[in-house]
Image 1 (cartoon, rainbow, N blue to C red):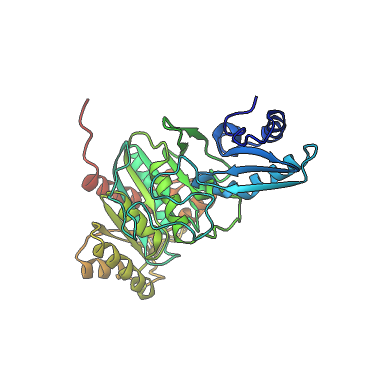
Image 2 (cartoon, rainbow, N blue to C red):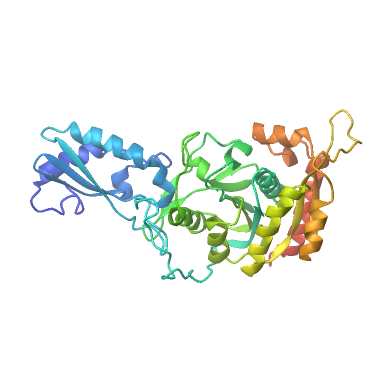
Length: 388
């Protein structure tokens, strides 16, 4: 029996629609394994003489599946007797929140957001999330994602309920650092029919990342509106549950992702990551100034790779990237220097092997520094929960 959506074209006999629906019935969402027809991602299926036509309406977090779904749908429909052509109409998912571009929109073709005319919508809290801490850097290569991942794990190890949102859409490394690059999150249907992403639980935290939704080595080639849309969906269309703190790993620089997070959600503040050398400080100053200009609380500066600690001489320190840069930046901005994180081989090994250093070698100098950073931020940002 044809569904109302499938039979919306009165010129299409129901038996023809049934044969088309049967052909598409095997198409599945890579995350949940559910039928695309059941999810409502394929709708208004109809036949126009020798052509099969349907709407493809994907939520933003499933946009990376679009090419695969389109190819599989064409192949399945062209195998139906009498079908010689397939037409796919791109539509907006009913589960897409206000202000978010549809997953099927042309790249760069979405609007400005819920506020209209370039105005951001009011900041909206994330249900169940008590505090949001962003981790940012002025440039890439300073170990920002390493800091974000180890900070999240250290906060969780202290007894807090922690989430990690990898908002570095163009360079999503958190899945590799946490050993879950081969996993795909499930997708559930919310109470109002919206699509809800289920975060991956690993290393004591719940995390989502674009890296969980795309193929290895697949580039994300999006302009601002699509980038903004997926970040908003990671904020509001994820089953975060009850979390004391959500750590947001921002991409480097001062672009759309930083603006989206700063304008979308109330934050306890942002941590600025830099290395000691002057080249890094130049870009870190710009990033820090951006958050101050937007009225976001700058929690302080983290100097990463402050000194190299050789494994055979753990009492030695080598300032291979210079020294004092983090202190200089913090003093200039009038914010605290939160940590000076040493560079140890265990940090690199933990990131590559999927077990962060705070969990792999908790007594190492790096792990202890990350734990101290977590304790400092928890004390300042995460007040004890009120007993029920």
